[in-house]
Image 1 (cartoon, rainbow, N blue to C red):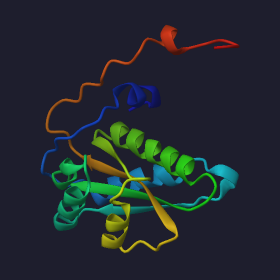
Image 2: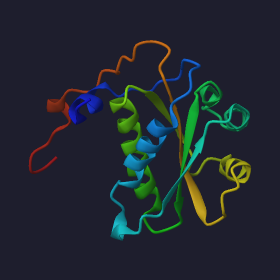
Image 3: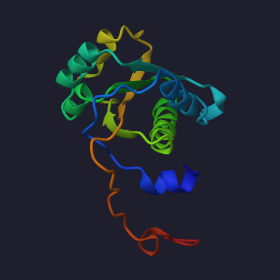
Length: 164
């Protein structure tokens, strides 16, 4: 799928088919995340791919809005070392992952990590060292139904030239 097609077709998917996502596709998706730009090229992000259903079920139970993670065949936990721009770096890596998943015909959904009260529990479950901050949990899998992107505000409504 071409880049702009992936951008236009990306949508949050919360219902997945039970079939697993091939390891090679998950590696390709994470590779897209690691290639995201980072402030001062520090490359502080780390990625934990969770395909074990019992671990995904525990993550789903811990989160407040990520119950569907239990059903998704994979979840990618995006972490960043605590640097000045850890959140920006982790978010752009997450977006690269979401777009790569779409380009490969997979569905995905972003669940917040940073500043959530459950981050310590998830980090403990995944045995993440304390110097890393959870940025996002990304459910990945084959959509159960066709993906229909939400309507976005028109470009003319959000684009400003020179000044707001």
